[in-house]
Length: 134
Picture 1 (tube, rainbow, N blue to C red):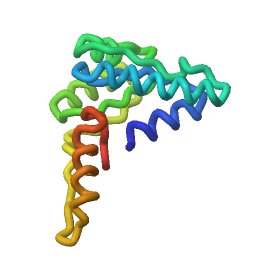
Picture 2: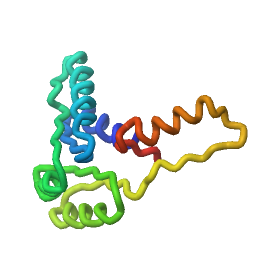
Picture 3: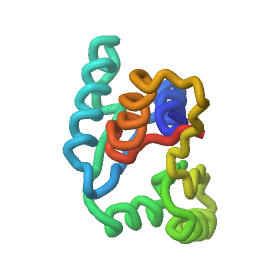
């Protein structure tokens, strides 16, 4: 939820947003980017306000090191987040980190399991690991 809110705020502020998803989910990234471009274009905005790059750590490192990336938002492990944070701070960049989440869920005794099970399954795998619920 928060990653999406950040991207909406970036675009609403008149800025482009370049994002890189997990290397294991490139097609999800392409599909999401296309959907967002369609919405932007339907509202008379350039679809290219939201761009996607795919790849592994080399692509992520290039984004972290590039001073043209004014604000970098990273969601992932604490271990990698520390490395990202140090590098971005070294170049005096702006940074948002969301680290260590694992989509925990609390279930009450009287929960409706017919609603709960599909919701939990979607929350854990329906967004290909690209969802934060804090």
